Amino acid sequence: MTAGAADSGFEHLVRELTPQVLGAVVRRFHDFASAEDAVQEALLAAALQWPREGIPENPRAWLIQVASRRMTDRVRSEAARRQRENAALHCGVLSPAPALRPETERDDTLILLFMCCHPALTPSSAIALTLRAVGGLTTAEIAHAFLVPEATMAQRICRAKQSIQASGVRFSLPSSRERVERLGAVLHVLYLIFNEGYTTSAGAELQRCELSREAIRLARALHGLLPDDPEVAGLLALMLLTDARRPARTGAEGELTSLAEQDRSLWDRREIDEGVALITAALAKGSVGPYQLQAAIGAVHDEAARAADTDWAQILALYDLLKRMSANPMVMLNHAVAAAMVHGPRAGIELLEAVDADGRLRGNHRLAAVRAHLLEMAGDGDAAMAQYQAAAAQASNIPERNYLLTRAARIRDSR
Image 1 (tube, rainbow, N blue to C red):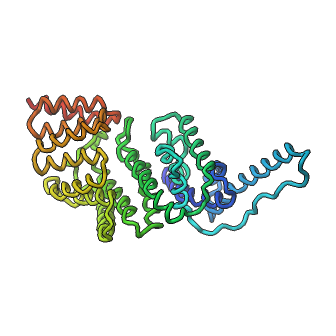
Image 2 (cartoon, rainbow, N blue to C red):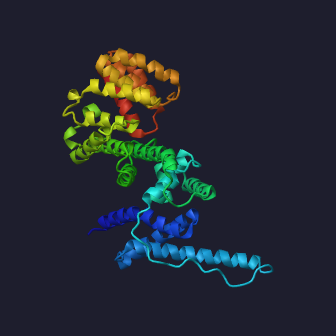
């Protein structure tokens, strides 16, 4: 095995084991913040020791043992400090640390997901904490993904852990009522993580595949633990059907390739087949939600052999339903595109007036980019070129910016 393959295998193992190890330590010591730190120390020890000595026969138990020892040391140190401070009032020996008893093979991924999406946290803090505690990413990796200094991200994660600790939440699956209340936040956080990985908000790269893959892994784990929830299945299907196009999204130089221009033979058929099967089964349950509708739209796109074969009438009907269910401005924007493909570009341009009036996409490059595309479809080259240039000026993702400038230049050069 090459060094690169070994590194990849180690990272995959760590990300798979992290929530299981953290869950075991939190269950034993009832201290989320300290347990998370102890697990990170155990992972660092593994990174230093396993390449030299080999991966132990039971890596999960090894990590739990090391992390538990770190926690035991902290418990004893804290007890000793308290004993010294209260020597005049208390006497006796230190309270023993929790015994290192054998662990079951219980997987606490779902519990950790719900904890990291506690209502006390903001979405940005919940995303960061989920990636750290459940995804096994380092603080440096998370900071790089969101283009902030590592120290800033460390503070954000620390505050999030403190908020979880202060909330007093028990380390257990939430009650049925709490699960209903929090599941939406869990799904939203996974959705945001996937989207940030699929198209980064800023920087030189179009996508960060490790983030989108991690979101898929976590969504798959959530689906495994809640197999009968149609929106969980819908979100996983949406991720798979979207990620299936990733191999065709960029050209040889990393340039963005539009959906209509992609080489569909490069799409991942296994992901498409799995996604279609998931959404078909979810829709059959009769309780339709926004993730299922988005997945259904993705399936229509992915099942078209050519861009010209896309069933835009069906996509428009699905967006009509989605608009009634969600007031998200991105839904309104995509609805306008679908309307343009069915009823002509002027119909789509008229619908953009409502997106303008909504105001939430003001200054977002996607609104100007869609307007440019529809104006180009309508044959208004000057206006389209101006809108492409305006969108490029607003875009902070460099491949997207370059794509928009290329579209503007194509119109200019065609005269």
